[in-house]
Amino acid sequence: MNIDKALRFGFLPSEMPTSFSSAPLAAAAPGLTPLTLPAKWTAPVRFGLARAGGLRRPMEIPNPLAQISLVELCSAHWGTLQKVTARSSISLTRPVKKPARRSLARICEVENKAQVAVSRMPGGSVTLRTDISQFYGSIYTHAVDWAVRGKAAAKRAMRAHTLGVFLDSRLRESREGQTIGLSIGPDTSWLVSEVLLARVDEALCREHPTMAARAFRYIDDMTFYASSAGEAYDVLATYERLLGEYELSLNAEKVSVTDGLEPVESPWVGPLRQARFRDDRDSNQSQDLIDLSSLALEWARRHPTEGVLSYAVKRCNPFPAGKKSWPIYRDFVIAAVGQDGSVLRNAYEVLTFARAHGLPVDNDRLVEVLNALCATHARLNHGFEVSWILTLLRDLELPVDLDAAIEVSKMEDNTSLVLLYDAMKSDAKLFRSVNLDSAVRRAERKGALSTSDWLLAYEYRASKACRPNKWDDIIQWKDLNDAKVRFLVPKSKSRAASKLKRRRPLFLSAWGY
Figure 1: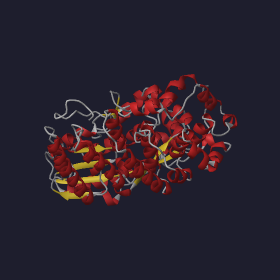
Figure 2: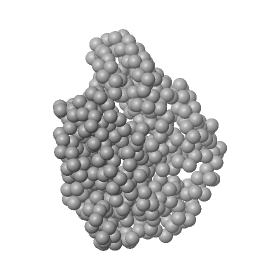
Figure 3: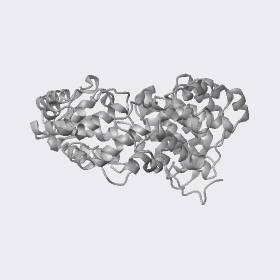
Figure 4: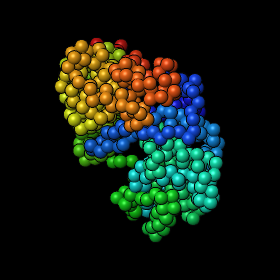
């Protein structure tokens, strides 16, 4: 694990808006005053991720000082950690060093998962599927030591100066001393989780040798193509026992043993992927867009907890850029955002791409819809949706209306409050009318830089929205400010982070109209 890449590409959750970046942190990290260990306990910033069907996933942004310490440890012992993860013959998500958007890559990327699944089917006639209950949130940090050096050895010398003990300590330091749970988001959590499950996989395949050829695991979802129901239930019983040895348990609602070989993809994927999408004439593409959007909406109704609408939005390539096709596509994207907040990431890419290529974005209507959604999600403290909407409005140079801003000012979410203050600085009406006293008090509170408000406290103090309070007498925070580190990046860098690649349709000789 490379320290610079781990901080630059593997620190913030990949679902964070492009208005935030940890690249400045990575650049400044080598010049920081060395950290004193053992470190003070810190808390991560909470960031609730929107998922299809209204479900949410609790992402976290660790305190950067705690994360630097953890990354340095993982980097120094990368060889050992990699050897442990390599013990699994069924993991498709084992981290490896190869070019990727994150600091590490999966040994099998998601687009190749279906192909691998089919390759594991021969010899099977029954499908066993399992899922670990609250996987990241239930990992016992002491069990990480058990995975690194073996449970018996770890229990004999619990205070030994070994990698497993140090990992246990760093993980707890980043989550207020808790021994249960890892932060969902940073690549270090993914690496540690694979270390733990590699030991389970190894033991499972040792007891059931056919697993290596007929099973695969993707993160915490394991699939096994058994030769009979009896074999499937034998494997299930063994797997449950082995997980229990590391204080993990299966999610009973997601465990299934099914006669026959189950399809490797959801039933809606094939129809949407194969849907006709012509680009010879604008009229043909317009009709295909209407058909595609109707198909997507129907499948989304049948499978409300799956990312049907996000897939449909991404499916449109070449980019619908005609006088007829673009307004249809634009309106479908905006409508999809209203039905499923997780589409906002895709909407950001589509709308900023369109604006950059000279296509009309229908500003008045877009402003109205986005501000209404912003106010609604702010009342529910939905940080993912609000922060993406504020980022989209900022990068399209569209206004945040007063009602939405007032609702955002009442939120707990750090990312939304940081973006709100940024919007207020360039809008005199908002600056006069929106009261940020509550957010400022949180940012100024003594010790805030070590709490779940560390992002709010640092950005507000660095931008002079409140007093720095001597950076809580933590020299490394002052070092970061002196190096002009900001996690909120300018509009130009935010747009550059979105790399949507779409072809121009054949019926257009040039972009824009």
